[in-house]
Every structure is written in structure tokens, then in C-alpha cells.
Length: 210
Length: 210
DNA sequence: TAGCGACTTGACCGATCGGTCAGTTTTTAC
DNA sequence: GTAAAAACTGACCGATCGGTCAAGTCGCTA
Image (cartoon, rainbow over all chains, first blue to last red; front, top):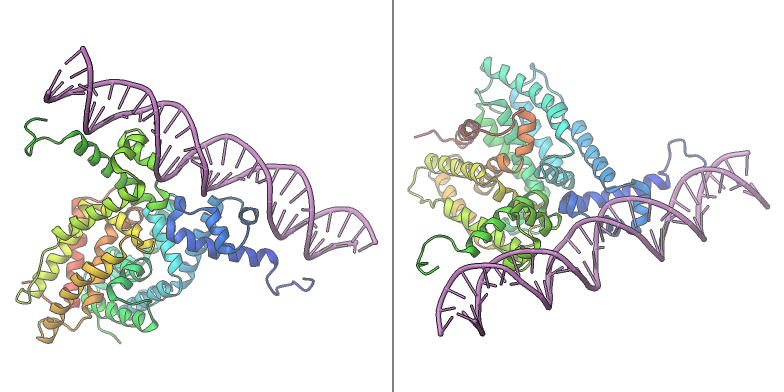
């Protein structure tokens, strides 16, 4: 580890990553209270004491995980401008959110669990940066509607519609699998679901592709 | 209790109801593992031993609650026929599902928690009666599309879209409140959200209100 | 009044919870 | 080579977990 200017991961980085991934698995399934450090340690294949040595406490681990999730989502969601094409923006929004459900389902379920508990750790985030994010998008949607470039659809509820419909395939995967009789969701399933969502929502907003 | 042909609730009925309602509150928030009998007993204002006297075990209480929820949903969802008007059927579907989110949000969150955990107790229900319910609806939707009475939209994913969008206002209430800056969702909010959903989804399926 | 069944509850059980700590091993720096 | 720093872990702590049990209380009928 001499040439560690910016090279291979250190011991700490490697173990923290293992713990984070294991914790995301357990927290996403059982929620904050239902998850135990022992279960996380078992999933990470480390002694419980070692987990606590790295993360300090259950609370700190949970908060760090939430922050990692919010950071991931922030970087994945592109910015938009009033000059953009509404259909392109909304389609990109749907497809990138659906891609997050496919690539990071555990993050989505972790977030869902936090909200179900009443968002005890994310309340200020919701009322702060997340609210600003929604408001800035909503303002643009509203202007598009005023200019006749799309139907007058309440922009906030439209965003909720897109959020819920795309997160459904991560959060309610067990339900989707049980009802469709599949063992897992393939790339083709996500692509078809995305196509269907784009078809209905774009047309429902008075938009046509391209 | 002499004239108990069908009269006032017995002691058992009264206490079981208190326990069920308290348990739904705790399970909906913290999930199966995260909920404790002690917390349920506190919410029901009964000693822990008394709760266990009535319900037997945590597992039995949880299963009974899930069954109560599924029964409620079954009775609330109306049946449909191929001869019905597509727009009316889908609008009724959206509005009745949204009404459930408004009147029974805890049931919705309880179900959401169960699915997030991988549906350990509801797997056979999902692959059984729920799958049949979806398939029968989907078949009618498909025939409507073949007859040109609505756009060819994948019916299963359309049902998922309606489910997720309506349940969002129960399951993610904390997020909705944080972003809209409100303290609670009023009747007007549910009405406006329902209108918005009907507007987008009906038009998105090539339907106009009759 | 005696007895019976339904109801109530505090005390208690072993297991597990989140977390601490002392002590050891391993790695790093000089 | 040696000492300091980092990594690691088993033993242990008080609290809480789901659940049991015996000793009640209470209203009813015989």
C-alpha cells in the first residue's frame, strides 16, 4: 500500500463497501428497526464487532446509506430547461428513473422503507432540496402548458405519477413477479414497461414523440 | 350477554378490534420484524400479556391483519364486463383505488411493507387469486384494444400503473406532505389527484370520458 | 354460596438487541 | 528492527424481544 496516491482500495474502503452493500440489503428488506447489526454482519461475512468498528453505530450506518442513495439519485437525474422539448424531457425522465429502479432496486426499497416509517431521517431533505427540485421542474411544466406545448396537467402530481410508476418495479418487485409468474425481471421487461409508461403518459399529457 | 343474537360487541370483539387497529398502526410503520408486541400493546392501551392472550402470537396477529386487508380490498373492487364502457371502468377503477388510499392508508402501508420484505406471507395469494384477478381484467382490456375501443396498451402494466399511482398517496404520504409543504392531505387533494390521474391515463389510453 | 369459564396481569424465561471494551494481531512508518 | 497506528474480535453489558405461566378478578349459573 505504498503507492496509494489514488490506486486500489484500502482495507477500510473495501470493508466499508462490503458493509454498506450488506446493510442496504438488510435495511431495504426489514426497515430500520427490523434490521439487526448481526444480520448485516452475517451478510457482509464479518464479525459484528468489526461492523461496529467501521460504522460506529446502527444509526450512523443507516444515515450514511440514505445519503449515498440520495447522492446517487441526484447525479442520475439530468437538469432541464424551458427551451427543451417537453416530450423528450419527460421521456428521458421516465426512462432514467426506470433505469434506476433496475440498477439500484435496493436503494429504492431503502428509501421506500424510510418514507413508510414517516421519513424520520429524511424530513428536512424532503422539505428542502427535494421540494426545490420538484418546484423547479413544476415551474417549467407549467410554462410549457401556458405556451400550449403540453396539456395543462398539474405538474407536481405528474411528477408523483412518474415516480410511483417507475419505483413500483423496484419496490413492489415481489408483487410484479408473483402476478406475472416470473422468477425475475429481465432487461426486456424493463424496456417494455418503460415503453408502455412513455406511451401512456406522453399521450396523456398531449405530447407526441420526436 | 343474554340477548347476544347480534347485538352490542362482546368484550372479546371490542378488545380484538382495539388490538387489530393498534397492530395495523405499528406494523404499517415498522414492518413485521420492526414491530414489537410491547409497542402494539402500548398503542392499544393494554398490557402486553393481554394482547398475547387474545391473538396468540405475533405471527398470527400479522397474518390476520393481512387477511383483513385483502378482504377489504376484494369487497371494494367492483367486477367488470366486456360490455362495459372502457373509460367508465378505468375511471371507476382509479377513483375507487384512490378512495382506498384515502380511507385505509394503514392497510396500504401494511401491504407495502409485506411486499418490500419479499411477500413471505402473501406469496401464494399473489400467484393465486391476485394473479387471476389481474388476468381476468387484462383479458378484457385486450379485447377492448382489439375492438379498437382503446389504444393497444399492455393491460398488466396499465394495472400496475394505476395501482402504483394511487397507492403512492397512502404509502408515500410522508413524501407527498414534505414536498407539498402540507400537514395533511385533504379531501380536495385526493379529488384533484384523482382528476389528474384520470385525465392523463384515460387520454393516454385513447379514451374520452363518456 | 359454591363453582366455573372468560378475562386480566405481573413475574419470569431464554434469546437477541445495540453497543462497549480490553486485548490481540496486522500493517505501516521510520 | 522497532514502535506506533490501524485493524480485528471474543466476552460482556443492560435493555428489550416474543412468549409462558400461575395467580388472580369478575360475572354468571346451579
